[in-house]
Image (cartoon, rainbow, N blue to C red):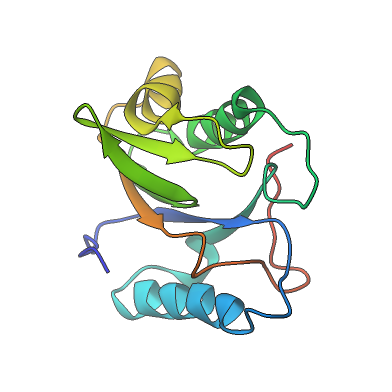
Length: 150
């Protein structure tokens, strides 16, 4: 896991919006991230979970909808004095020097341009760090733990 600054105020754990019976460890993986963040000094109530709108089977969600949802949520976190580490459950790879996110519809989203820029435009006065959890390790949220930005 990426080292987390003890001054961090809010963390969003982005997860796919469905459960897989054949991946029983997916919830445990997300829970372990939350436990580790709390152990590093983050207040438990400031760890939020987000269900990706593109994470549902047979979803017709577009890359733009995913971008808008996460951009909106980043904007909500982009208050003075709040630093956010956003954990996006998706496949990410380097493409021409940019980190590119592939949501479940397979369309590329440039993380820096599509997710960080919308928050900055809404008045962010600090750096936003993006940490990525591969989709293969996080598959869903337990009942009551999801925060859906839709």
